[in-house]
Length: 182
Image 1 (cartoon, rainbow, N blue to C red):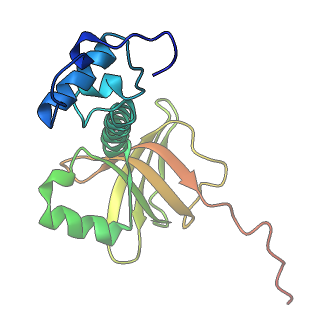
Image 2: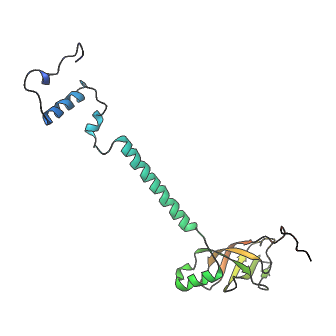
Image 3: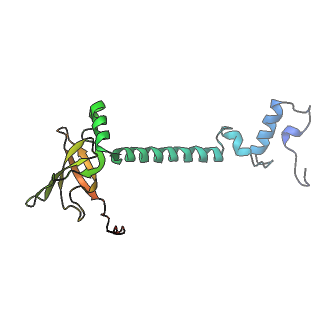
């Protein structure tokens, strides 16, 4: 004890406390402010819920929540990239492919492009050589969109087998390749 400190009444006279009695005596001394202990708060809280544990649990819940939201968003807006033959195979085995966002890549079938200037609708077929799908797109087609060009069509496969496109991307021609010598 330091000078000037008076002993508590529990320490006056009598046999030395043992075991649980000693723990209770120490705890009473801490609560009364007679003994300062940095772990005093741990006695009143659960041993497993220290501030660090609470922080880690809270951070884990937040990370899992954000991850679940991201996964759900990606699932809703995720787009498959398939060749027409792969799409036909998937539709044959899984009819739920209709009305889902899809992305199909292939070549425009030569002579299949039909343009309706009044409604700005373009109809054509996309193929990979094995299977072809009709495509309907309303909008302005890219400048490089012509027969036999490679395209990526984004949209939805309708139950009638037509792809209702929301976006058509055409591969840039070979304008950057060297001209073959004659």
